[in-house]
Image 1 (cartoon, one colour):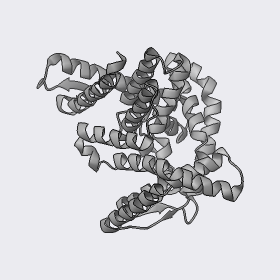
Image 2 (cartoon, rainbow, N blue to C red):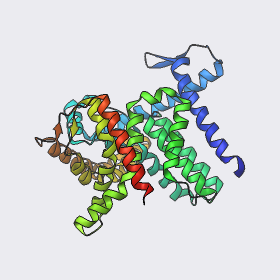
Image 3 (cartoon, rainbow, N blue to C red):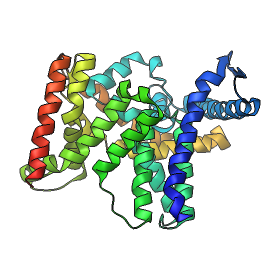
Length: 348
């Protein structure tokens, strides 16, 4: 079994991606219900419909629970952080504030959620050095990925974490950089259109920035403040990610958030706590809405603090600056940065 674990992982993921792609061609949504085109097997269509309907039921129930006891934009935040439901169109002013503060990325399901779910499940089932426990963790995170819509950042995180944990299971320390390249290759092989997906590009560039430059910024910040702290760690992570992300944002949107590093430094610590409490809050709501009220006060306090910080940072006059770069400048920036990074790491 151990010998074929990697093959099982790749085949399983490929099957789920094929299923996702088949949904668009095999099933169409009509008046809230799904019907089959019958170009493929009737049984396959039936199972696809059941999976989609299950996801829709879970999302609908989650939205109902959140709106029952939380006001806007708090309900939209917990839905975005936990199950990836994009309800921010209902609060356009707050959505604009999130963009101006450079915090829109923390209120949607991303790679962070996959790592968080994997860690929580691993703490429950035990050591991932046992095959059964590893497969349970992989299965739960894969289902969670399906529940949140198989967005590129989620898929990227699921493949990467799987590769790293499978390597750990075999007693091998896998370098993160090759894991990133392998993950990108797998995603492009399975769906070449990912190459033009902005969320795919931003997810990989942010992760690559963390791997390549976080240590550099951490050393500088530690020398300046003469101490280590989780808030300062969040600052170094944000700066590292933005080295590669900001030029792409400038090219695509014509503006960047100058206040983003400071905003991220002071708000990122809220996200894991709110996500965990929000997950428990929504789960208890499935048992009965009355049970979710137990967690309403703590989750409201956390989200209210987050909302206050977002609105404060977005109101700064320099929060969002209009800077638009051309494709030529964008490509030149990445080429020069790649050369500098290559030679600096080579001389280490």
